[in-house]
Image 1 (spheres, rainbow, N blue to C red):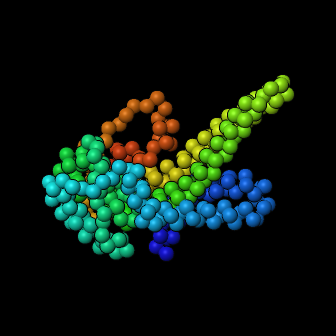
Image 2: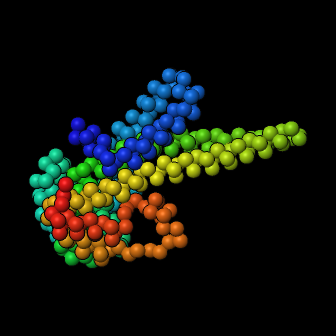
Image 3: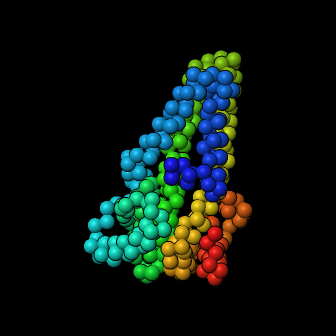
Length: 291
């Protein structure tokens, strides 16, 4: 029930639209305009199956593996970060009692300071995070615990599972179209078959292009939610006492990169501009505004 409540929040409206648009497209294609109810039930079953697999420990394990997360083996790393995580987690647990009872900490060997919340209980930190001060590390951990407390990373697993099913269908459609093109090209022995092959080839190219455009269009909605959820996690970090620490960490780890088209860059970004994030946290600190 808590997960359902977390899903249907204003900040997640983009993710809901992302799933709905993709599911609607696939259903329309395979059900003759929503008229064949037999296939509708098959699609819904596959869709739900993909989500359940993603929410299982297998789904979380796969996401950690894809992110490059590994068991933290270096003793110097463990004795520094594990106590910091325990301090922040205890405060987070008081603020969000329904959080998981333990955190699975993983390491990603990357020199850029960063951290990621994955699934229900996993936080991956990069090796570069150890370049930060202890206070800054706790600020970053508080933010990631904010994602776990608000079930953001779990919701993304749901999105990943549903998108895996949809992407599989779209990929199958693309493969079939290219196979048909190849077969017609192979047997194009006269003018008529050559013309037919060209037509099918162009149809396949247009279909692949339109599918790519559709996917990018839907991703805009998902990224909108991801950016809003960054603000939610920042607010959580402030509420448990790590607002200034997070500000310092953001100032040290983020650099604005010039872009020819700032509007498109903003639309495609999964994180808001770090100056905007800092400004909001400062507002919480100065005005004590956490409504």
